Image (cartoon, rainbow, N blue to C red):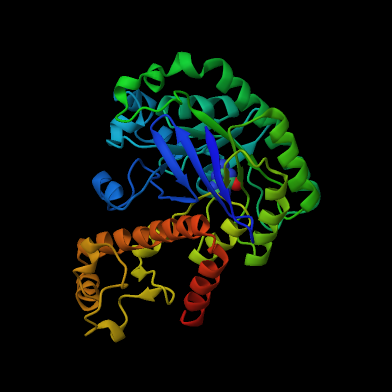
Length: 389
Ligand code: GUN
């Protein structure tokens, strides 16, 4: 299911290949976020054109709207959204904490009032896995509690113990029920490029906040339960960058070499390269598409704000290596679209930013293959940070 193709000599960077029911993913990889079953402003063909190998969906949002009856009628999220490549779904716990109101956590799960109409709902390890199975994602995440930052050690330890107990329940539900509930998940005739993997994979999520011993404990407990891959959660929750890196350093060395590792909710381009150097294989982040909708474009010299006057007459493309669909437009024109509140501006900036992220991953993979990852990383970060405004 996961093949480690090469490990870098100087860093812990890895080249790998993850096989899922809907296709094979080359790692390291960035996964565009399609919370509502769409990557905002983009057509699925755009995502293929950009070289996206996998996208994200979300249990919390899709369960709320359109709801499982609609998903069942469509025979799963792939068919519903016309995306025939791999999908990873987050378990919903994180979104309950960030979006819902009146949250109440118990051993059973989390009760909350949803952010759309305030009606009362409940998510539990079993219901999260059931929703993810019904969505028919290729990779389901376990239902966890993501503690806030800062977090005292007692809270972090109790929370981690709960996440481990929930992980056991997720695993049990997944083993016992998955195939009977979602026949379309096992139906290769619905998949354009079926692989030898015909089941949904399940990933554990290492928690433990900023505490090294708790991160180690969490990793060991999850490995004992046994998952197809392991994520590091509870990062990018408002902590300084050095704490984020420390959390990765505290977790990744305890994870098995032969399973994929996923840093949840990250990050900036330099952060992703630093994490790859520490042995992380997978990333997701709303940043490239969210900041695009605020007029920000990633460049090799750091992000630029397209509304700035300095681009008024700038005839250059956003970057020298952007996708041909975007390269035909000048900064001057995209600035004009932005100022005129034209929708094409949002679309071009989203397309460009995802291209920047996916190209960075492709270059990282190539550099690991060629044995020059450190040189590539250092040169990229030096240029990116030297000129960042
Ligand atoms: N997305 C970003 N961080 C997290 C996390 O800690 N848990 C989950 N489930 N999703 C996340």
